[in-house]
Length: 88
Image (cartoon, rainbow, N blue to C red):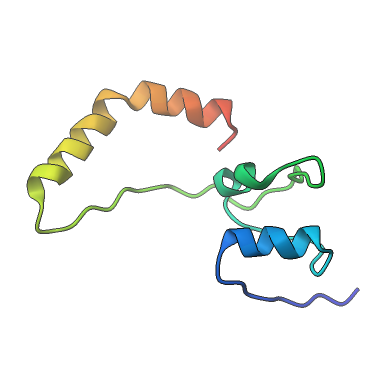
């Protein structure tokens, strides 16, 4: 089987070429894939290794960075539950 790789500028372009049968598959983060599943596509059960997520804020805005950090800490259990619910 011959495999070739192609790059596209954004996820919606990838979904468009998948629907048009110009590509057979695409692979991105599972949380992104969930946004593109429909009656013409499916997420396969195989996965790559799990990856940690992070949140980035501007260095020159320590007040906002603290707000985001505190928010995540305060809502950690809810975030973990959503992660488990969606299989991320």
